[in-house]
Amino acid sequence: MNDFSIQATTGEPFQGQRDVRVRSLCVGGDIDTKSLRKTHCLAISPLVLEAGRCGCAVVFRYGAVVLFHVEPIEEVAFLEGLRPMILRPVAEPVLEQITLAISDDVKRTPEGDRIFVPSFSLPVLQVVAEVLARSVVLERFENKASISFDALRPIAANLGSGRLNRRQQSELLKRLSDVLSDQQQMVGRVSVTEKPDALWDRPELERLYARLTDEFEIPDRFEASDTKLDLIGSTIRTAIDLLQARHSLRVEWYIVALIVFEIFLSLYEMFIRHS
Image 1 (spheres, rainbow, N blue to C red):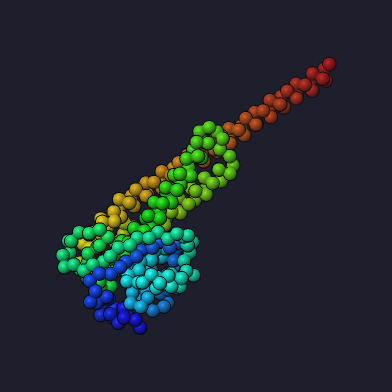
Image 2 (cartoon, rainbow, N blue to C red):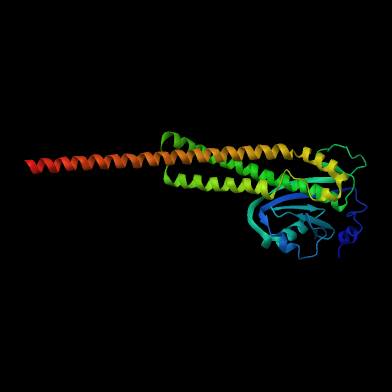
């Protein structure tokens, strides 16, 4: 058992240290945390595992991992071992790095990338991990929304000029599916607006949670991302509706043309018959 495990049994990891390096990564769409719970873990909700020689990792089912006091080579080994449990892995993980530092002043504001906490107890680490995990996942959604906006520009231009083709229509449907999936994951699985489970047992940490949430602008970023996804979804639905309306109008003109052709054909046969 490593040093962290021995210290974790007392409820105070990293004893004797005044600061700890923290790295938060969004590594995929989902992580199979049920399989990880079958291994030795330090806490369940959220899931805390030993990582490296004297560090730990908090793993979230929505694709985020937060590493505390884990050396770079240990981080690579841990993520490699986690790879089979990652669903829809990303090519380039979204990363955020800070330093946790002990301070007796619970109201002390962050200084650069240094975040001050009252202790390195396991519940404190879980609360910090919740906020950092939500931050990197929100950044992933923000990046995807920006990419979708850029991709929709030429489609919108072609829609206005009437040059939208079937391939672009299929792309619109795929992007609409992605947007709905992102919204479902952000609201349903990430639960950005809900309080962490750790706060139910440790309500005294609510002030720390509120301070970190404000520092990383979680509510504002969630609202902005949700608004962007709504706008993208609405734009795509409007484009699809216009395409379907044009298609329906084209079909109606085809029907009118066939009727007119039938009329002319009937008139021609009548003229031939009476001539």
